[in-house]
Length: 61
Image (cartoon, rainbow, N blue to C red; front, top):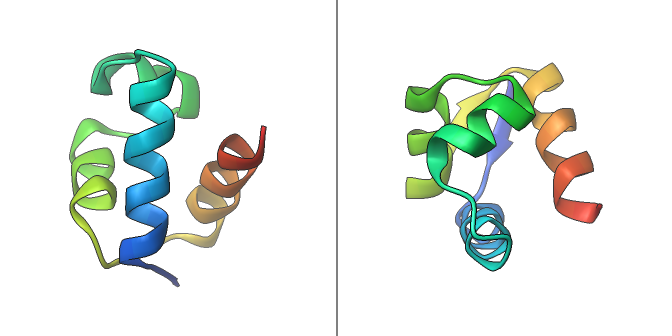
């Protein structure tokens, strides 16, 4: 399991907002559940390494 930090949460929210995506659209893009995305945007949590990698790749794109 990987640690998702508050700083990463903020970056995720900002990028989603900049791209004008709603949570459902981003979930489809990242192929993750809406509950997972909600937890990620709210702050610190633990996630699978595969999800962590997908999210970081999306953030740097």
